[in-house]
Length: 360
Image (cartoon, rainbow, N blue to C red; front, side):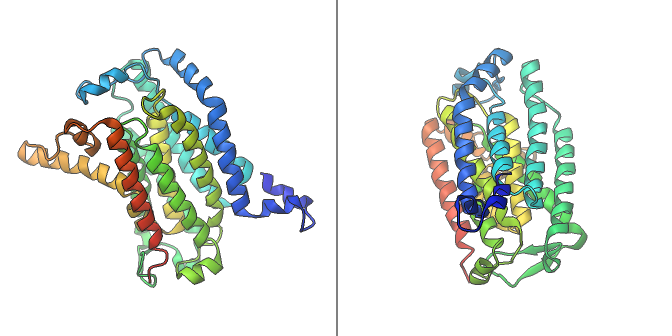
């Protein structure tokens, strides 16, 4: 919205700064950060009063988690509020890619909110049925996939781009939208599975958002794409503003979510943030790079899939408990030790993902 202040510029004054995506991204970051600090404590107090006993703790989970009983959930509302306010203030609202990402974020956030509300109101660990969650998620992802495909340049429509092999494109045709649906829904649920320890999910989400924001900015500039030898997708640079807001909002939330957490993000936050990462990857034609940048989330999801399939086939378990962060809890690792080491892994994977931009 503040981009409209450029109408007051004569080309060399303060208002001209609002033309630059990087300046507005910085504004979005600080706006979201201040939002988190201002509204974090009041929101936690409201959630604590409204929820009473807080998020139900699964009895079959690690024993140490029982001491977290009473911690309020739905803290993802704080992140979503920060992201929405900062993006609407600082991004160009005539950019359709911004609206795609916001649409997916809010849509998955609504699904997560309904799930959290049911868990808290009924004091059960089971919320909205998994089938309904998936169905609603696929509907939102399908709409985003169709929308993004219509906005892509004709040469890239329905194409799957590959990192490193810059000239390789795979025409998915009618299968592009189902593929986009899997990417977005898969990312949302992978982040949801990762959100099991205090601070574990939010930092890797911020790291992935930072990497994807850089990618979005690069592929949205023709000069950068020519230098980096990547596909040019005009308009995606504006997604950097959203990513900056997400990072700022995430830091504001982490202030209260750091061990011991004063609030959990819940499905409200994890589904929304994961869906947002998937939507950005689809918009920028970097779906495969998302699997690298978000490799930690992939590992968490795979650990659950492997555990379930192996147990059904043999009656035995591969991991002491899934997702894999619980496996290390069972092995005796302290929660902060797991969280910080997983953060380090997420950062390394993000750097590898960014390196694919320059590999020829």
